[in-house]
Amino acid sequence: MSHETPPPPRSLVVHYLERSERIVLSLIAVVLVALAVLLLLSQVVALVQSVLNGTVRTTAIDILDGVLLVMMTMEIVYTVTLSLQSHKLVAEPFLIIGIIAAIRRTLVITAESTQLEQTNPDAFRSTLLELALLAVIVGVLAVSISVMRRSASYPQAEDETRLLDD
Image (cartoon, rainbow, N blue to C red; front, side):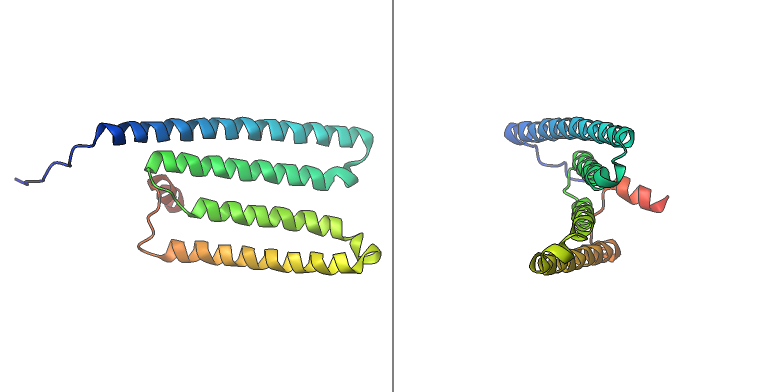
């Protein structure tokens, strides 16, 4: 027969703070999903209009930028959901959001910089420097994720561990 000590009683204040946190995080998730859906619909409308107008080539970067913003928003929703389920803040999804944001900016800069080389060499050099910094950021974030996954002491959410095992 095991004699485990019962957990100490939680105060009423802590109980209501935890509930408040869950409510606020749930509302944040709902707002983010609504925003993502509206952004995605906006990008679909822009794509259809650009196809009908024959301007896909000129609007493709803006549409891609918007779709990647939707992807980042949904990754934030996933992070909020993990926080609600596990009652822990998991760092890896935030790192993934950072990688997506850096790649998004890289794609936009790359598409816009093709005209800079001839028109403004100084701005083009600044753009190259920004691209180099974004590449370093992506590398550092990727290494951070790799190190965290290999670390035995890194607490992963149960759902995330289950997904990695499947």
